[in-house]
Amino acid sequence: MNLSKSKYTLGVRCCKLLWLSMFKKEEASEVESDSVLESGNLVGELARHLFGDTYTLIDFDKGFDNMIKDTIIALEDSPNIICEASFAYDNNFCSIDILKNDSDGVEVYEVKSSTDIKDIYIDDISYQVWVLKKNGLKVKNAYIVYVNSDYIKDGELDIHKYFKIKNVTNILNLDVVLENITKFKDILRNKTEINTDLSLSCKNPYPCPFFSYCTRSLPRPNVFDVGCSTFFSKKLDMYYQGKVTYEELLKTNAFSDKAREQMMFELYDLEPKIDKPSIKSLLDSFTYPLYFLDFESYQEAIPKIDGTRPYQQICFQYSLHYYLEEGGKLYHKEYLSCDYNGNPMYGLSKQLCDDIPLNSCILVYNDSFEKTRLKEMALLFPDYSSHLLNIRDGIKDLLPPFKNHQYYVKEMYGSASIKKVLPALFPNDKTLDYHNLEDVHKGDEASNAYLSLSKLSKDKEEKLRTNMLKYCWLDTYAMVKIYNKLKEDIK
Image (cartoon, rainbow, N blue to C red; front, side, top):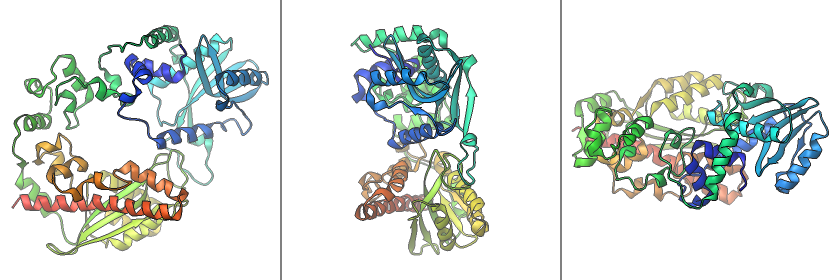
């Protein structure tokens, strides 16, 4: 039975996760997106230049045996840098992102596209160091290379400022590697599914793609369906105590008032809760002309635009519905950048300042996102800074009535997300159903669509742009509908 470093880290997280990933892949409900994998690959390729542009790259397409043979040859050429250096011991295989091959030993560099160091990374690199030592190599040091979230691009990318490098030699888990390998291989030899209970590893450091499968036998609804920002650790504690159903959970004092309210609504099919005075107070703070704004954005691990950081949200599109007066006609404006290779935020900022007059009232859903984006763009574009900050100061939020349960219906299932609130308030309106859209149904699909536009033929580009505009249009039209619903229901 062969074991790789990826299988090893799956086993460290959860033995059942390792088994399911091998024998029941079809039960996975979530998979890592192509954009996440691509980001990891790009960061890995960039890191290869940390010690200069001269390095030996072991070709992965040659197969494990040839990769190992090529690595042995490359090791003879010390001192040098070897990327994807490959080793095996007793059917335990690993490829090292960067191996610094010195005359007196080697140093291991594990590259991550994350902006912090997770515990599982230590297990990952411990396995690699263990394999290297079993191959007779002297490992001097082991390092985690990760992304500096504070780095701001200014001109040519500075690779040494973009990356952080931490020496983890003294915190490696070498003592447990052999024990783990033996246990994991025994598990994988057994074709019978193992029985491992739920744990914090179901959500940490990443959500497990088999969580739905592992909880399929629990009654519905159950403790893991409780929303209202309830910590997973609290749900897990109740699960361990054997308190799983809403009836059992309501007999405890373990949950917030809002979480208890969610359970009560679903158990007893309660009528909608509408706190008319609180909602009226919020609506009375809105003034006309009244604008409804939503941004779409993308993130890139490696910043291309001066003044931006790794993983900064780059706005490329907005939708804007608006009323000039109460009870008046509903208007709409929109923007979708064509500047695929430059800075889409510049044209967006310019157009936004043209579309929203100074001292306007602007409604958004969850204001922290739009406010942060406007502040970032104001810093980038001095010519529009004062107007963008004025727009930011005029923002009002439609989220609080739903987040605070001033307006609550059971179909919200403890969530204040607009994707939950909208169908809960308008269950039979197909025009508000995101599933009926083509190509783009949610934010990450809009991001990926924008990043793909420059690679498409003209016809496909135009079709995708049209569908992107429809998606963003629905985001702000949904806010219009929710706003009018609130007005109607407090009469």
